[in-house]
Amino acid sequence: MSLEEKLRDSSGPELLLNILQKTVKHPLCVKHPPSVKYARCFLSELIRKHEAVHTEPLDELYEALAEVLMAEEPTQCHRSYLLPSGDSVTLSESTAIISHGTTGLVTWDAALYLAEWAIENPAAFAHRTVLELGCGAGLTGLAICKMCCPSAYVFSDCHTCVLEQLRGNILLNGLSLEPDTADPARHPGRNAYNSQSPRVIVAQLDWDVVTAPELAAFRPDVIIAADVLYCPETVLSLVRVLQRLSASLKDQQAPDAYIAFTVRNPKTCQLFTSELGQAGIPWEAVPHHDQKLFPYEEHSDMEILKLTL
Image 1 (tube, rainbow, N blue to C red):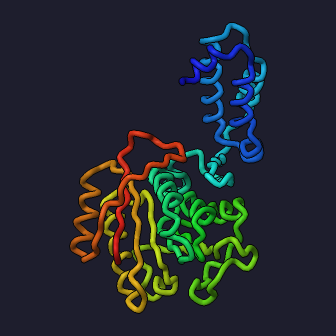
Image 2 (image 1 turned 180 degrees about the horizontal axis):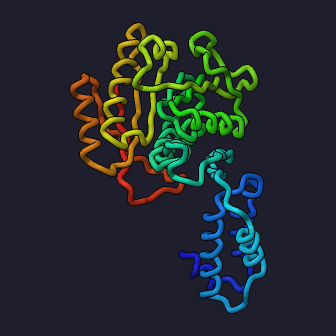
Image 3 (image 1 turned 30 degrees about the vertical axis):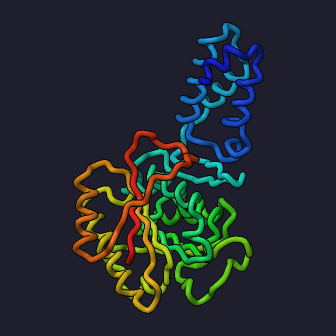
């Protein structure tokens, strides 16, 4: 049943008041406000639907909109995602798609898609060390840390501004952070501050200059990346770093790698699989999962490839 049909069936304001309490008035949104533009569009659409069905205005809707209209749009906003456990992931993100010369200050659809798959397949990460390449705002990693019980999680990116925002997001979600130079292999076990949380490390990692010994120090059991296949140059850099990872980990069991991406340009995706073949890295497509937990473009063509390094 659509919202309009539910509004027609309801005689009082309870339905809309309940929607307000679960959205813009939700404690998470009050504490960590979303984008002003997003809240304005949401409330305007809610008012439009209400007015299409009921002639009597609802003061609470207009008061909420007035508050938003008076607010200034900051350069940072918050996005909060509810998890099946009842917990949530809240991120501070840039309000601009491109900021400080990078797209890594916002969450992209494939990160949400990979997080959903991980939540549905926690055994792939449980009690293992996970290395994320190009982690951006941190949504996928934070969801895995909260839902999949990894023993250690290494968030990595190359951009200083991305890493600075990421550290704040990790702390915002109640996880403790170890120094960048920490070696996950030296201190096995859980975070000393919280026995239920993984050890969390943030590492500055430039795919084009990182060495095999530096990669070997992380000793990952699982490697992931989301929405990093946006141009041929990054595809080539990613395959090279995966080759280096494979070469550096010959003394341990070959890790699995999960690469999620939105198919924007089929040629870029074809280049990735072609380069994997030339590098001798086997891959297979992961079946699409059933569970849709997060908001993203439903008609986007998204894929996850499982690689064996």
